[in-house]
Length: 205
Length: 205
DNA sequence: ACTTAAACCGACTGCTTGGTCGGTTTATTT
DNA sequence: AAATAAACCGACCAAGCAGTCGGTTTAAGT
Picture 1 (cartoon, rainbow over the protein chains, first blue to last red):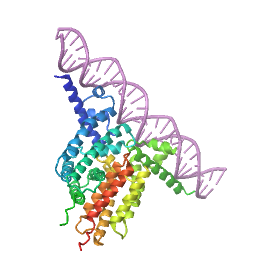
Picture 2: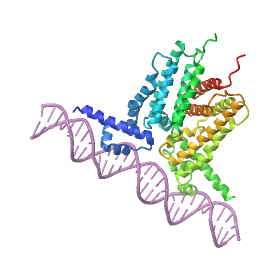
Picture 3: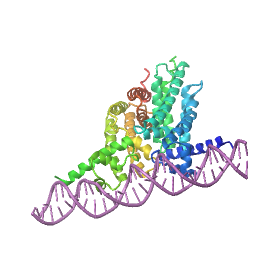
Picture 4: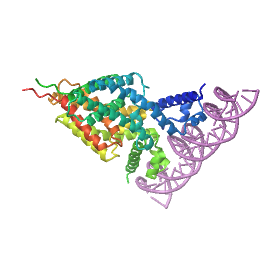
């Protein structure tokens, strides 16, 4: 078999399991041995493929986390329909997987940001870059909505983006072990309420 | 001097420094020795006053964190004025201290919730209890606002509370090392926008 | 079949951790 | 001044950690 293929397969397996454990137990509280035990692999295998635990984590972020964020939170809002509808559906879907599948690592990001903040600037850089990408995409989506007449021309696109990101990051934290399904429903209702307040006002005829 | 007083003073010193370091570096990433070095105290002193690191942390939560949350997020919204104004001012103040004083441990809570989630149920219980208290107080404040005619009678008080908590927890995460002052301003603007949409609609005369 | 190198093994090292414990200091009581 | 107990000290221990390294297995190339 192609050597390169085997290499990729092993690295992939390590990264997937690594993310799962880092997410569940935290980076500092997960040892390299924990991950290797799960995979029945040895220290040698690990340090053959990765130069350090930190390097390993950064590769996980670059490969798995970035892609997950893209597919869950960025691509779904790219389109020509009403961005408020797109965002609503996107959040709805993202929160739904969060309700059912505890390991969807849907919003790993805020967990890790909290964990590394002020402790590991190198890793923080990678994480906040992802947030920035999300923010940029939200902003341009909202601006498009203003052009297309879906969103009131007076609203501050940056402000809306930050408010959306805040509430999403927050609800993901609050949904942890606390009636996630009910919370999701209530959250989405209020989100729609907020959206109503920034959409183009129908001209009073 | 009163023995009890000395005892309290030492324990207080330990807890204050403990919270500071736990907040800065995380619970699992802060050793008991780190805290003791900061205070020039010994292992013996620590384990004379506290039975374990975990017990120590729980006492910090019960003493320091609970009180901070009360004084910053709960007491300021108790009053008979328009709850939406009270909450606006409360968030404004809380975020302002977060901007200027990195160590205000204003929202330690979401950090710790992320850190202990799925790892230490005992500690999680204490933390989510605090969230619950906050929630209950927000809900009753909003309900009061509905009675007093400040808030539209049709809004779901629970939903508003959860939406507020989410956005606050979220903005605290996002303000980490990323233009906190500008973000605060944008956040507050959107919060006011949202509040406008749930306040009592002026009768079209 | 033989060579070669990639992939993997696992004992080992040096270091840090939470927690213990026999002992010393400090301050109050008598 | 002697007695007593609370407060504190710091060497020590077992366990866990990231990372190393000399060696073995596996599989592709010739």
